[in-house]
Length: 111
Length: 113
Image 1 (cartoon, rainbow over the protein chains, first blue to last red):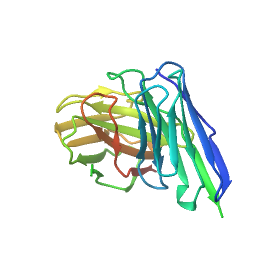
Image 2 (spheres, rainbow over the protein chains, first blue to last red):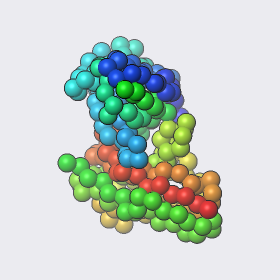
Image 3 (cartoon, each protein chain N blue to C red):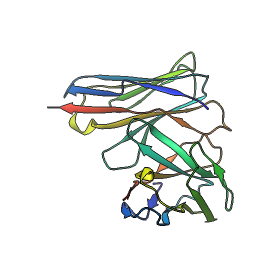
Image 4 (cartoon, rainbow over the protein chains, first blue to last red):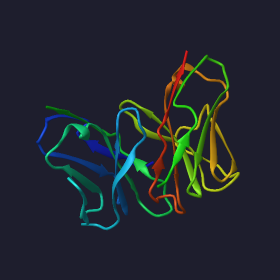
């Protein structure tokens, strides 16, 4: 099946710092999604990307659909304590395919 | 807002028991999914359904079955629970094509002792 490599696995940052994480697939994807999971809750959609090169923002979050269509990036600017959680990427190679999820990036923010 | 509701947030069951996890969505979504989440392994698809009474195996269907008698409801069944099925279970739903945005429930924490 499809494989998604998400990195880093975990991050410990200080409040106010910027964060970057990425996801790489073994094949070309036509959709990339980024989810956040708060502790003890289900994942919630942050950003959806449908076009190579697309750059989309949601508040302090910005995600990009890589030009090669094999990767995607998520940046968080000026992190705050409520950014704590697990961030998942998800992608699919075609509209008829199931979504494949990355293994997640666990973000910890210290004051 | 999309609402996916999982009936039980926390369950403790004994080895060998039959376990039912229930999920209901209120957005008339065609697709429904059951995932399992374990540390370091991410989200793994157990089963999914794209229509009433239809079901498809995901990546890790062994030890599980599902039931979709109504469009809004998708049940995950553990016929004989085992300790290695201790996990967080997430139900999700989406419109139409399988790659459309998936909306998740809050999760059910199952402990098998």
